Image 1 (cartoon, rainbow, N blue to C red):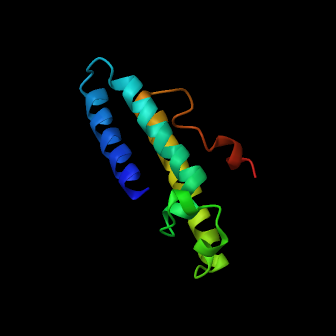
Image 2: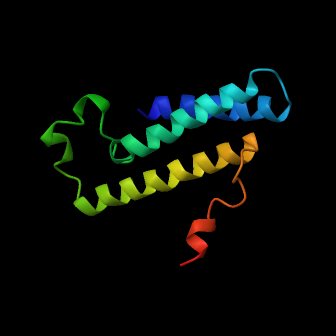
Image 3: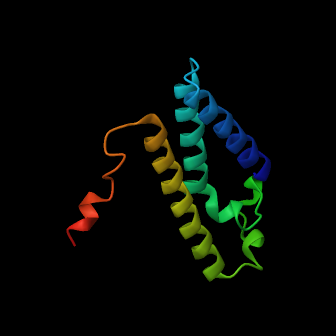
Length: 108
């Protein structure tokens, strides 16, 4: 899983460079790679940050030496990284609400 993360992150950096240079196809490649990276962090962060293989996610033995606090921390870090990649996507693609995504939270 670490190799997949590194490959997708590398492709994301290349895609962002293509997007900044206005090369054709850079926008769609940026969207695809950053969304893939965001979903990887969102759904598999507990396994990714605790060095659990993808094949062993559903096996009870793979969680034996890991505390519940560490799993909750990995899920929280995954959510934060997922939101960060979505924020980068909005910023580099110049989509609406790129500046004001936090506006609904300001009222409280």
